[in-house]
Image (cartoon, rainbow, N blue to C red; front, side, top):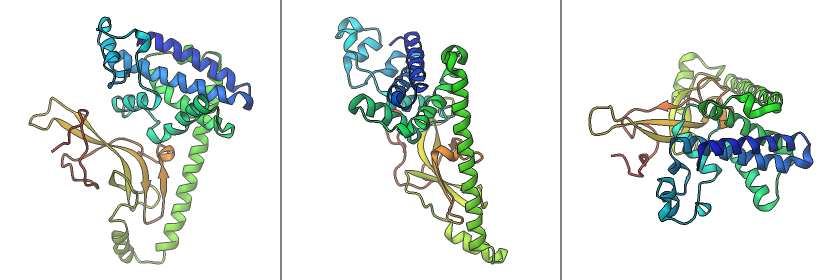
Length: 306
């Protein structure tokens, strides 16, 4: 549970992952497995640097005793139970909502690849590069947060890191632009023959309700046709003790998808970042029901806001 030890461990596992990656497809299983462990340890280094209790399984009391300096009353340290990659990412995402470019959905291929190799010796070699790039893009902002020099962490593989990230970004930008072109063509085909007044009436009718099945959605201007679309995401609560009153909180939406009924533009979490500000956190009105959804969000303690 030592942050410095976790940093060193992450760097060693990442070096081993990159060494396996450059060996080619026959070593991709080692590459994705080691990259997953390296990412987990780095996320835990960030969390443990804030407090060791943030990386232990909260259901295991002996682990909490060790994390709070009361290990003499607990089982040996080797029996401590800590969280896994997905939960470490979830906790870090809550603490760094504006800094991590990889959300819960985008993390899934990395977590699945790492777990598939670890538990079943199963992995998809054709997806290794994409999985590896998810890892690299998640690690970079955590390194910055921990004030770790990239040259020291990536070592001789820094050039490979840069090329993988640049290529992934290029592919995503091309894919995002293709979606916009297709959506604009669809919009023109549907509404190009209508007068402005007729078009406004039709658009008001078909864009008034969200189209994505999601926990929360907020109306957002479509980057393709400028109609009202819907941005879907998870709602979180940030406590703001400096506020006056009995409700010290702010609500925010962590976006993971967008849909426009007018031009049929549909964007997943991996491409949102390339479409203006669609991927940015949205702070919501204090009225808990000022967005789609019947259930208000819970705060960090699990209580429903009222």
